[in-house]
Image 1 (cartoon, rainbow, N blue to C red):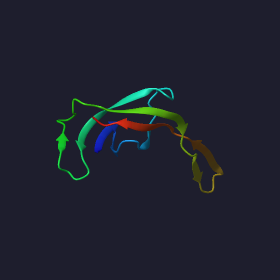
Image 2 (cartoon, one colour):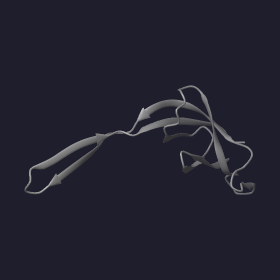
Image 3 (cartoon, one colour):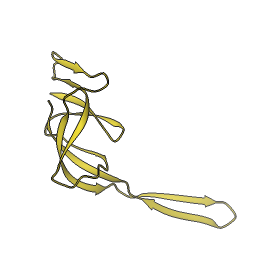
Length: 102
């Protein structure tokens, strides 16, 4: 069974028991989360449900952890004027384990 879900304005192709990292959801670890489902199908493609735009059934998962990505270094430099700036950024993300595709 596979599904296409929407989370944080992005779409993901998921299978049951799969772990994926999405944008920060604001839900604590161990809590349940549901996703808007766009498509559900089996691996062979024999049964296929396509939403217009969403299906009434929702994919469910459990939040594993709230983490941050690796640091990205941003540097600004202007030649001959001694202008140098360095900044870093770490994006927040939520790790989710997909439990059920209905």
